[in-house]
Structures are given as C-alpha cells and as structure tokens.
Image 1 (cartoon, one colour):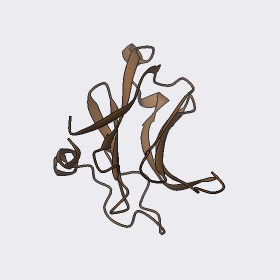
Image 2: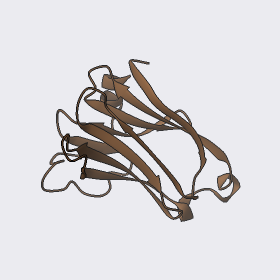
Image 3: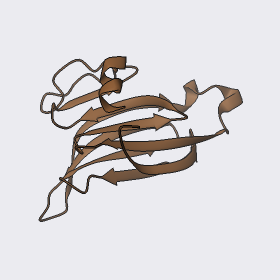
Length: 137
C-alpha cells in the first residue's frame, strides 16, 4: 500500500453506518454514510476556525436494493486510505476500490460515475480507472 490506512471498520451494507476520516495535514476529510437504503462517500472541508464542515462532492456507492440478497447480511470490511501527501483518499470495501477523491485536482471518481459532476468542485469525468487507482496504490 502506498499510503496511510486511517480507518478500518466492519459493517453490514444496507444498515445504518457512518464513518469519517480527516487529514492531519490539511482541512480535507471524507465521510462514508449508509443510511440503510443508499450509501454515499463525501469529500468535505473543515473550516479551521469554526470547525464547520462543507460538502465539496458526493459519490454514490450502492443502493440496498441492488445488493445481492445472499450477501445482504454479510459483514464487509471498509478501509479509508489516504495518500502519503494527504491529497487523495480512497474508499475500499472488501478489497475493492469503490471511490477516490483527489483534493489537489478537485476530482471525485467512482465505479458508476454517479452523480454527475457538480458545478463548483468536480468538473471533470468521474470514471474511476485503473490509472487513477494506481496513482494512489
């Protein structure tokens, strides 16, 4: 691994779950949230003086209805891995990279390329490619 493992947690997809990780070197962070129906991975920025968090981008990870019924109650392992320069962060579930935020390039990348890029942060293509993954790992 070419980075820092900052979170490792077991969870069950399709059940309420929330986890966050913030860089110790800058004001950026990420949040993974499964509300029981839908899971999203968020890029956030924390105001150093007020500690208020601003969502920069959101990436869709899965819908409960699309989880294989055989695996619905299966425990999964979630990893949040930051790059060594603290400017990229990956969401890995069961050893599969689902999403990456690149805070330097203001890019959010995921498997299903949803939702479309927003107009104030991610402005380029959302496709998570092996090239993007290899830059982190």
